Image (cartoon, rainbow over the protein chains, first blue to last red):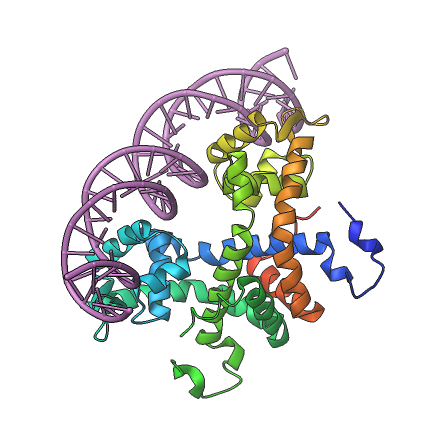
Length: 163
Length: 163
DNA sequence: CTAGATATGTCAGCATGACTGACATAAATA
DNA sequence: TATTTATGTCAGTCATGCTGACATATCTAG
């Protein structure tokens, strides 16, 4: 591959771990890791008659109770028309509820129902072992690095998804 | 904020970094980081009349010149019918070539053409700065941890994508 | 050499989940 | 009151995944 950067003048300008090959291995790993994490629990979803789009919405509503539609849109980065279908499915299925915000009644607050919370818990139960194993095997320092790099990649957009 | 999990009973049974909240933050970050990395360069793709599916194929063929169809399928984990459409688009567009393998002529070796390599380079040029910045800001130890965790998540499937 | 296994390609149809554009409504705000 | 904001909805399209069935060429085992 293009080893252009090996012959950098200053070691500070381009250390080994910033060569194209290392960066691309990072991309490979990100792709594989993401695929693995989000492949878990697909069986449960199909049983519930839902897809991955529903799951993502469910997940982020669970993580941010009372989230507004606009808030969810900014997390998922899809159009409101796309989200609307997903949300309507979830509401019709009794997984989430949509209520007017008391302070600004234009806004809707999204929350899980008991049924939605149960599905979310079941999905998490399926997904969790993989994460626990990977985190534990890697150790706390590695996990800290994992988070640090991802926060950099997400560009401070990755933080506000957590309550 | 939900500080529910702070009061864990035994530190050994569930170290702090393995609490549900920490694991879920990992999921949040993985989602955001992945989205950010793979959103870069979409403009170029559209200009070329291609989508993200084409990009993934192009990327992994670039990473593994001479890759077989089956090999690419096992990386992307989609059906051969889905892949066929993408590959045919790329071949018709002159981005990749498909040649019989000399040793086993049932197999096809996939490679980028000059045009494909140029597109791949342009995409990488768009994508790279984000990765460089995030890796450099996080530092080499963090990057090592990032890789370690992702390798655990990918379950040793994330390694063979690199040549 | 023949029979089967393997790697690939293709047709036909379907499902999911994105998109764009246009328009409607209710509530807040200037 | 006029405008902006947050949301919902209709209608159509596109991208990308899927299943099932079948064809072809080639390799491999008996």
